[in-house]
Length: 254
Ligand code: LHQ
Image 1: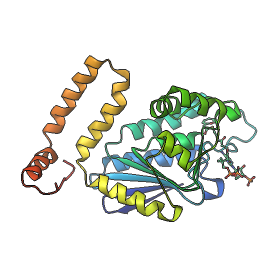
Image 2: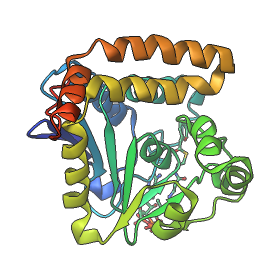
Image 3: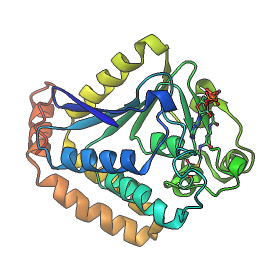
């Protein structure tokens, strides 16, 4: 369900149900959760890259998973939420390479990347309202923050299918590249991030997510606490030393 492959200090995770457009099942969510947990604990891994096998990134929830049964979606969403919590707690950067359609919870997963690339020909649709559902997998949290409330309203109420270029213009992705160069470009960015000051990047991610629910006074206090922590890392020492010596820093992620 999830392929894992290490390339240096980058761990590549591939959603692997290509015959179903990588539609998401409970089993896939469990495998993704386990892979994320293991990656977070593995000191050798300093960045992750998430993509999809075959022609899609992910079509979201596998709408055939439950057959005729009427499932308890609230209970099922706990499996999704565990994955979102694991991604938001991931202390290393996550690059997402959107190789084809990303729909529903598949689009949500893509948006959780810290750096997002899409191939020319990839597409995005929230899809939820089209089947009478509300946004999930953190979409209601993330989408208005990424694109603003007005665009989020349009994307969630009407579920248009956005091209990679439209997604770029909206800020849903950071870069669009030709399909044949997607993995090379995504890996390049993941390697670059893997050589970064891992602790500082993790703490920056925490600030970016936390400050939304904080007052200015609280946000300033959190910045000070986390700057204190970043200031105690070896990577900060190295960064300042490299600056003084007029050379690129060699961060170790500590
Ligand atoms: C699929 C799917 C799919 C199964 C295409 N499942 N087979 C969370 C928890 C609880 C409840 C429910 O929801 C959630 C979160 C969610 O994610 S809800 C949203 C679920 N996803 C969707 O509604 C997306 C449905 N799919 C699409 O809109 C399109 O298929 C996309 C945009 C993904 C791709 O379009 P195309 O490239 O044109 O492919 P296609 O539509 O022709 O699909 C190809 C095949 O894949 C087709 O099967 P078939 O046997 O006819 O070849 C589809 O039925 C199947 N498929 N999505 N989610």
